Amino acid sequence: MSNIEQVKKLREETGVSMMECKKALENNNNDIEKAKKALRERGEELAGKRAGKATGEGVITSYIHSNNKVGALVDIRCESDFVAKSEDFKSLAHEICLQITAAKPQYVKEEDVPEKALEEEKEIILKQQEGSKKPDNIMEQIVEGRLKKFKKEVVLLMQPWIKDEKKTIEDLINEKIAKIGEKVVVNRFERFEI
Amino acid sequence: MSNIEQVKKLREETGVSMMECKKALENNNNDIEKAKKALRERGEELAGKRAGKATGEGVITSYIHSNNKVGALVDIRCESDFVAKSEDFKSLAHEICLQITAAKPQYVKEEDVPEKALEEEKEIILKQQEGSKKPDNIMEQIVEGRLKKFKKEVVLLMQPWIKDEKKTIEDLINEKIAKIGEKVVVNRFERFEI
Image 1 (cartoon, rainbow over the protein chains, first blue to last red):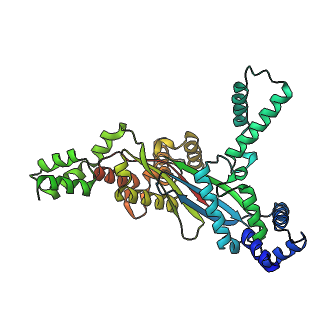
Image 2: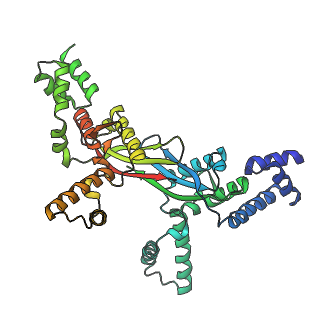
Image 3: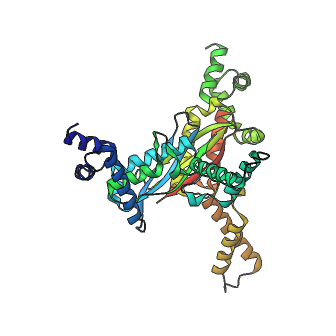
């Protein structure tokens, strides 16, 4: 692949500007996978840097499945009206609506999972392991692993994206942050199903 | 038109069961317009009669205002899949979504208003009347009137319909119940605004 083709491919896959893609490739010996990783890390860094920013703009978006039996409403925020009106941001909001409709998250982020829900889950796990006579340290690992799995099921940001399971929704959002250069936050969502 | 064709036509136009259509035609000398009127008049009576019926079918509908800053998601139920798929029912769901988006209800029905919200509202009213030295019976009437007004603002079913303020949303639903011959219930809704 020529250098220009690589830049184009990276741009297509990440949505980041040509300039940023070129730089990322140069810094990573023209290795496209490494460049992608670097861009993702930059998104995370950028997300961290902008963590304190106010997100007073955004969009309310909805998605109703064609059977009219399930749908979602999402309130997703950004910093500026300019970004709120961009196709990039709107398409992210749409993807997140699809995700919520299909993958049934119950909370936006890890901190939103109530302690009570974790306790209940832990009880279920321990009950299932009853009589297994595993040593305590192994049991702890099992519980920890299962709780992590539980969170990946119920927390929107931790869920694998339905369209590319290698990415989490948080990765998807961080990629957008890297591209649009603004803080993006899923403020709240609702999902109804009959 | 044969008798069977008349029954079919009446069923198509009203959504009421074949049996009910047949009965309505028989009671109205096979005059389809009179039969329709009779079915319509059964409105609230039918709503009352079907109060105990299961509403396992329905649709999830959403509406997003063109500014993308406010939207609603509604879960509205009926008894049969046949009605759930009808244009009549879907258009009712759409009207209710519009109403929720525009008129900001907080509860579906009167019973859903928490006692605490009423207490708080009552306190505000009493505070406003402080020093007015009105007799107790007048104060009681004022409080009662103002609480009723408060409910008409926050309870979806009690709100005047934004498109025809002479009707409440409950009236609008009862009209549809008369037409389609099934119990219709707004199960829940959510409204997001930025």
